Length: 268
Image (cartoon, rainbow, N blue to C red; front, top):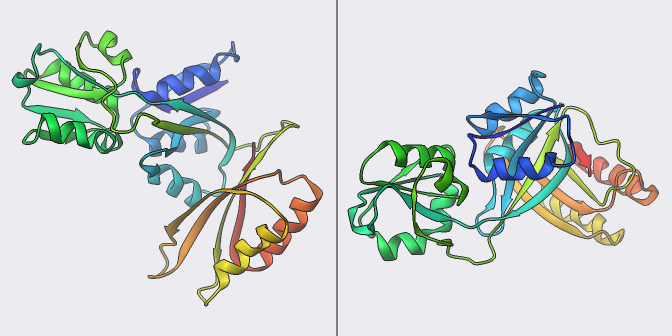
């Protein structure tokens, strides 16, 4: 089995991918430059599955992943895992005062905003597509640093100038495993769906009210522009339960009747 992840080596996604494949002895892993490129590799059958981030406990949904799932009808969520995130300030420099720029992924920058303001109020912040790429830049350029995972200090031979610099101690990222084939595992506990409602008063309330009637626990709802016209949205919703349970089947049939668009992303 070929499994892709947002690379390069050293990203948190790489760590999540390593965790996912530890019980898959025949798995081969491949890195890609962006989330979209990773997921496109699944669509083109270059890889069988992709490991990508979908939500962070402090910054919310990863919109690139969510939008790609909504826009591409052949993809399914087959599993998920969470990873505790600890950010480090890494550099070839030995002193904070020698640093004149910091590279990092936008999510990492946002998660370390207070630390940056306190220690580098006038620093140049440069966004990269991954924290590992940021570490590579810090290795290549004098007087630069990066915000990345601890493993990047070893991979790129960088000094650790700050440990656990994220603003929130309880910082976790949820990763999902994406495939073109739905999970065939017997035991699941969560289902994800995407839907849109008619642009009329109370339509979203009517859909969500069905979950209350069936006593189903919702764990996530995310709205994204439908890209049709202003004011129309798609909704990504997670709930406890599986699509094969009898009462869930009845629920989803009722939900479908009230939606202008409806798709099951998978039970996992």
